[in-house]
Length: 194
Image (cartoon, rainbow, N blue to C red; front, side):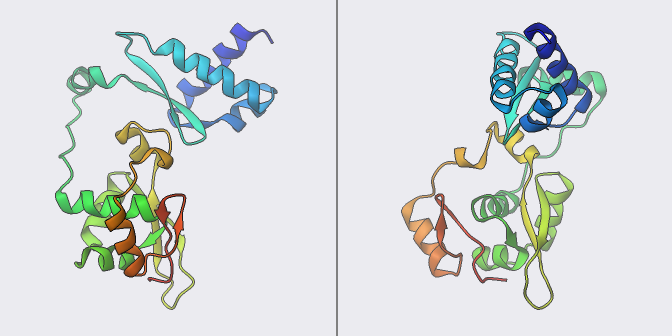
């Protein structure tokens, strides 16, 4: 298949999906190698990055997704009568940061870091699609583990968690003392806090 048709097929796949589609899945569907698919997806994303274009193709972790240009969010909300979500509370932002930098984490770990009950806050973050369940800890009671979603990445305008700002040293060392685990790629692991 020629390049223009391959890019057209990629565009159609992204549009029809509505969600992020992995580069591997696109490569498999179009019967091309992963490296070629990656380059072509990036080229397609660059083509959509025009000054006043209404559509963007954004990279989210190992995939790409078609979405609207944030510049036109108010017009889209008005036309589709979408209520604007209320901004996150300070408590929600704190819990989201704990989860983003330490994931996957249990509710108990978030509560240990913050020092208060986080049940309602975590439920709210799950309902907003910013946090999701990521399995269970192998401890008595098998507590749920939570991690961030691709919606979290999209809301922050980043492609992967590696783009999160580094924590100040005093915060990083303080988490190690509270049982946050060992450093891994600049973030804390779940450790044995449950």
